[in-house]
Amino acid sequence: MLFDTHAHYDDARFDEDRDALLSSMPAHNVGLILNPGCDVETSRKAVSYAQKYPFIYAAVGIHPENIDENWNNDLAVIKEMAQRETKVRAIGEIGLDYYWEKEERARSRQQVVFRRQMELARELHLPVIVHDREAHGDCMEITRQFPEVRGVYHCYAGSVEMARELLRLGYYLSFTGVITFKNARKAIEVIREAPLDRLMIETDAPYMAPEPYRGRRNSSLYVHRMAETIAAVKGVDAAEVERVTMENGKRLFAIS
Image (cartoon, rainbow, N blue to C red; front, top):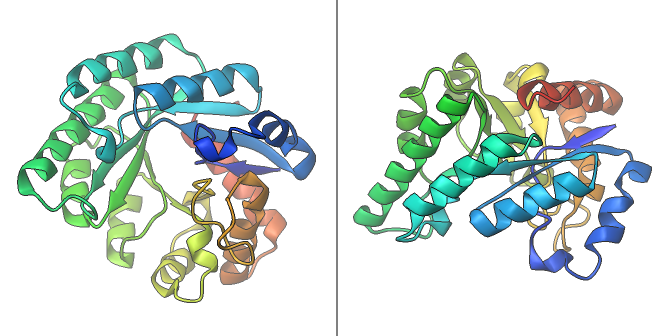
């Protein structure tokens, strides 16, 4: 079965059919889903889905786009959830996003909050789910400062050289529907070089639906397309990619 290691079912686009959609997943060969939070509210929702569905696990964290003046208090709530809830298996989604944020002061605050959440992951012995958008250099600098922490760079968009360093640091690389697009040359190059036992697949639902579903609301129903694409690049059966990426996700998130 497939493991969608990153999907946001807290998004309002699932409000009309969330329960029916999630309940259908095992019948569609989706055996596990990890729902990361992006702030306190969505982290609480992720935990609630993990409590309701046996095949869903949660991560809790503050996304770089969701940092406000109360972030210190929010981080205390995130820590309490991570300590209390047994199905919280990572701190995330955390990291840096410079695509929207051009002001240096705001970028510096993102870095502070990223470091604080890496410290939390280290304290709680949890992996991290890292969001890195147009911030490769600073993300790597902060990642290097926490050699005890392991995790995954989700929706990986960096270079082959950056991938090599992350692999040396013990990180996994995860890929979305972007790898099915015609212009995904850089990601395909990374997949070709990286060992299969360090790759994971995800939808990042409801965003970035793969071909031939591009433009639709994404969901874990389409995660098989990432497995099929990686299989084609690697020259192996899709069933082998399905099996290994399931094992990889279970290993990182300590799911028995």
